Length: 259
Image 1 (cartoon, one colour):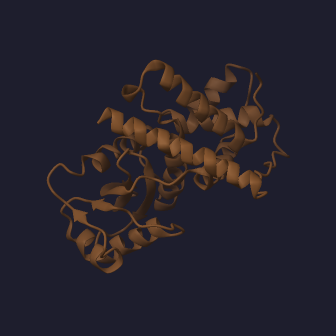
Image 2: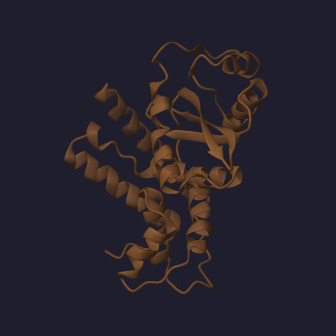
């Protein structure tokens, strides 16, 4: 299993490199970001966004880390550029895995129970998330359409729990895709909820469904980039993958390598 997952990661990296070359040949160069109006250079803003989304830190934690270095930041810059960086990361990511694991978890926001729908591939990469009030057939169909938006392919297999809404939506939207919902087959999606629960506790619950959707939509792509699978690879391979992740981050944030 370890060898298969490592092979999948290497193939995905290869596809990303090919797409980058094709993009340059086609003239689709990455445009520079507009950092005008901010007191600090792009390196500091990029570092602040990375700290906030990579680790379980609050805005005040990031503020204190940078204050120790003589830097006074505003959380508004982290919010604004986090969304920008995540959007650029999504446009660069290669084709995800062909086995999709879907699951939903409940979140209590302002006393109301909502459901956070999440899809990951067979390697645990977050594909998309959606916060909804229901978990019926209509909600499942809406989530499926959001997943398929802009894609040029359909998954090879869907894996869910035994919620009937998935089967009803799958028969209408992805009828040609096999659907599995056996016991313990969907552990991949259920485990993916753990970082969300951790951040939810750190943030003392989400304040609104819009805030939860906005934060998790940024949190997913950034963590996908730096999720190198240390327990699956040797130390030299892990350092190589980590260096590539930081190089990609510098390109996305338009920060030059100081080295």
